[in-house]
Image (cartoon, rainbow, N blue to C red; front, side, top):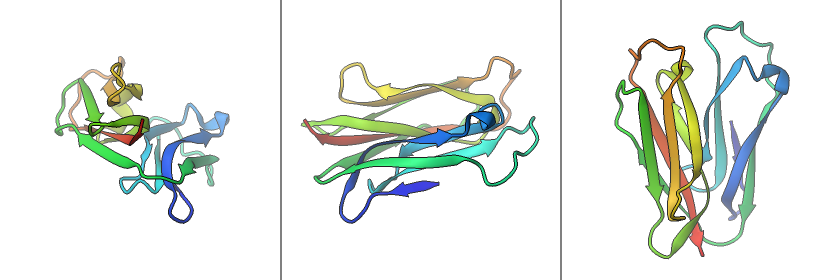
Length: 153
């Protein structure tokens, strides 16, 4: 699901709204700026151990858009079965993150993203995903992609 920016505006932040009654049944596996910087993308899946909720889901993507130049920097981890991965997308010199997000691919039901924020030095965006405590081992490879929205500052 994508929320697009109007005209020539660029995304500076974004997020989603999920009907609270679906919170235990639906996994948000992506919450990040669009790679072209012109919107916000949210990906969700039904947990495999839960019944499928009735359609349509009450899930919406939201984009905060502004005029001016921004750059989206994307960094992806290698695909693997590691129990944890941390990925950082660093802004070019002279730019700072105004927002960011993540997408995870593969083994979605077994991975939880527990960090999704600006880096401590304010130069980029970081996400950290790890295996759920009730997952005995990962057999499906997974990867984590981080995107930083970088603007002057």
